[in-house]
Length: 427
Image 1: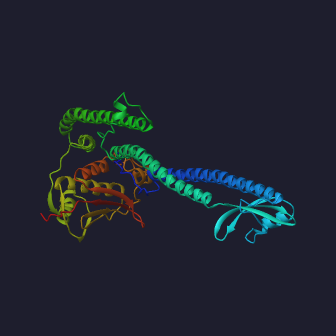
Image 2: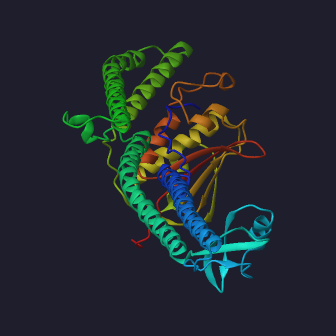
Image 3: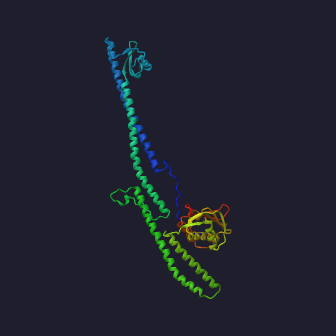
């Protein structure tokens, strides 16, 4: 119950927008742009604000000094300084009453004002500086920082996304080619221009693409060599086997003659199986497709196999298939069930799905995990067969665009499921 591993389609998980490399890079670039813009904006805001406040304080203190000199000399006040103004911030008033000079931002009848105050004759002498222009400058700077940051982030994102999209497109193409190769298309190649054009610098993606193409070429060459070897061996064996068959037919009747003829027949079947496998491996087989009632084909295949099987038609369906190849698949599955399983063997037709089940020990773990492998049999099988039946079944199923899967029933026994393309055109 063994065969060569069938091409296994990779299980693809859907890549979320932010789970992909493209999404992660875009998110990372956006976050980093926002962080850099925020840090630079805060630094520029702090530096300019400090300079503006420092200039306003210097101007306010300069006016306070001029007012203090004018007040001491009894000259007119040219800087609108005042004694004990009620609008003076309380903290600055307390500082001045304590004999210290200082400045503070405050409000003068709704106008942003930089106050400077100092002691004078037991009171407080205060000068003011209109801070509206400085505050407007800072607000304008903040708006300019936000606008320029938004433009910088947008421009950087556009350039970054454009650059990474080119890389991700090449990666997606490489991944698609890898999936096609794993599905059996050994002619698929990435053919990245950077690997063939010496004038272009080769990057990491090009290196991966070149390695994948080289791997595919080597694999294709080895498989073709194996296919040629298998076909050549099978062809070379047919001539001596024909002579051996003729010689066995000339032997006198008896038990030894029967054993010889049986072994010759086994060798002939093995040779024919090898020839069929080599044709299927070459992917040159073309099916003769037509519309058929699946229930009738299943019953005919069971009768043609000469093996006992219960046929259950749950729901008949019209399928598009090659009758001869489908019978070959079903006969191999029935033979496999009788050879490695135990009766009763049941063949069930449910729409375009055929299920073959026996009540034996079931498929071995390696077959369920990796698919059938040719020329491999379990020790418990007693050395029956060469593991080519399921290989041929898989190859013929692939030729008629059907899907063959293997499983074990919960209550014991091997379950093989064949899904055929249904006739949707009503032919």
